[in-house]
Image 1 (cartoon, helix red, strand yellow):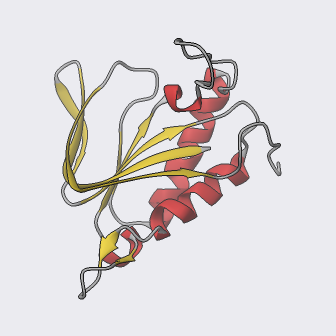
Image 2 (image 1 turned 45 degrees about the horizontal axis):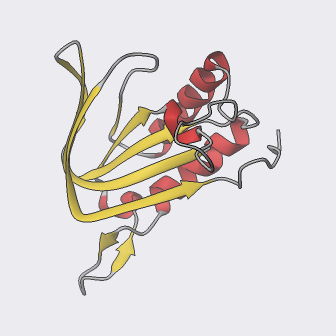
Length: 154
């Protein structure tokens, strides 16, 4: 699984012009699911997202994770993250999980995050969404549970 993390001062997701999720300071996580991902990948990605040190400590160094700050997590499903973009000028989507599998793994990711973190909001799987954010820093990181083409532990 993949997460594109952005440290934000605010972020929200709208569907049909109405807000379906929003946070103040925290992380916006665009989440992609690859074809061979499993529940262990979702669980590992939650650990990494909550613990990844993206926030400044008292000395201004990025030494704190989201779990340390108590900030919000806005998780947004994003199938295009799993695209193969290595050649040509058009993305290939054969590396992405089937939509039913991707939905289940995104929901598992959210369930695990909710069990471990006090503020978790989401976008809506399969919907056309508008995402608004104010990136702080800017700070953006790409996290993966494993490299493309490797097999899940499930």
